[in-house]
Length: 609
Ligand code: ADP
Image 1 (cartoon, helix red, strand yellow):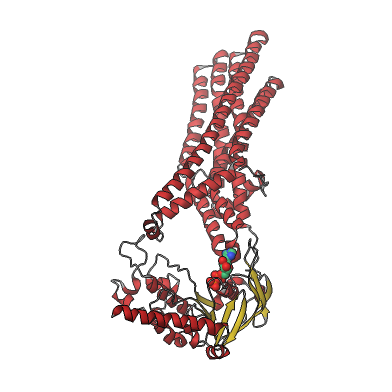
Image 2: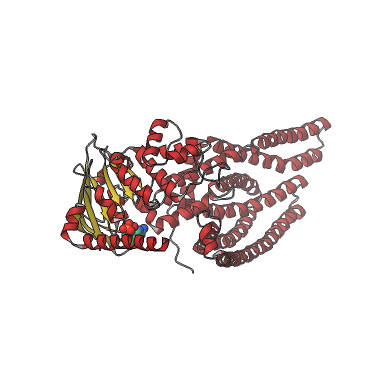
């Protein structure tokens, strides 16, 4: 499963600067804590290093008792003060780090909501979104853990500089021994940290699988299928298979970690042995004093530990950086649509949308779904789009409302290419009912208004009325303020598929945009409810331009024009009566459908008798 790794776009230094800038913008306390911890650490280490040698040297030089006590008090006192400052700030240091990580999670979610819709159809985007989450999941994820690493790195760096200055006073060779052994440890650590990186895609795809199977098992909406189709055993098997694969990979990783620890132990033993022999030799042959021996002895110990730590901190930083780099690449994922840099929308109430030779092929797909479509939709027009499953009806309305751009050809609004506009503004022209319902766990009124405040209740009620849902809503204990989604709220209402669809219709009407796009808005309704919607269609759409997609050909009679999509093109267009008179494909489909319905009703009657 090994694949050639792409180099991350940003290196550890660039990512560290990025995080510092983010912290400066959102959570300055992080930087303040960082500086404070580094400064107090270095000071404490120097106090610790000099305390014993200074006391011994004072005793060796037979200083007075009072100055001896004063020396000790100065060291211990300043150390206490620094420890206290450190402990005080340590108590809060994690909150701003968590806040910044959550801010970054918000940025990830914001990108998912704001990105050009076409990106959401690309596997490369969803893969990157998944990988971006690696930085954000927990306290130990890169977006938060990097501060601990940077803190350690800066402490070790400044600590080392001070220790090397001390060691250089004796012999540069001592410093070299420490540096060389640390470099070997670094090489081993690099390989170990690289292990996860080399198996990153393997980890990712296994975890994705594990997460997805778990999601299916827990999902409220799939619960019916799991039972009826007996999927539980199969899903469990899939879950345990993926789990076992993750576990096997982790076990191999742990073995690698163990080997690295073993190497480091041997190296420490060698380095300390050589350095201490060197110092003992100085005591025996060059008359090094006890206090200086102690100073150098501790300096060797500290600098050796830090030299190794500083390098493994670099490795750790590299690992965080690889995750952060993916996060940043995700945020910077190419946006084919114009947003803030687009033109402002045309004003006025009357608008015309024109599709000029529009063809469309889905990203990462080969076959065209629509070919050479020409169409004009004015405010006030009522167009029906019909066709068999997969004919491209939904794709067509996604192109009209700017969720997708044509692969070739143009969509114009009032004569200007839609791509010129700020796409977020362009969406304001449209209201829609799509086939997949998205009810938020909020109240009925909030779902209709798609807002938490400033809700126009009279308008909510009017739209609910037009969608034929008034009786249902008013029968609920909290009426329009009843919450939806029982998974979240105990007293929430559960709506049937048809009721949910009516609620979606009310939501679309509330938005009151110049164009209304309805993709099978009556698919989940019973025939009576469906005919109610048809009757109210004119009052619902009023002066708007509307497109009504339906597989029920009879439903198109109340529209001015019917477009029949077939084999990727508009095969026929005209009024219902014109198309029937033409006796072409529409007529053929209509006849089959009406025969089916009337035969169905004859059979129903026969069964009833
Ligand atoms: P309709 O609404 O007429 O049933 P659609 O517009 O939903 O048809 O789909 C038209 C064709 O486009 C179908 O063959 C479908 O498989 C394909 N299609 C839809 N969405 C995607 C996608 N995200 N990626 C690739 N192909 C897609």
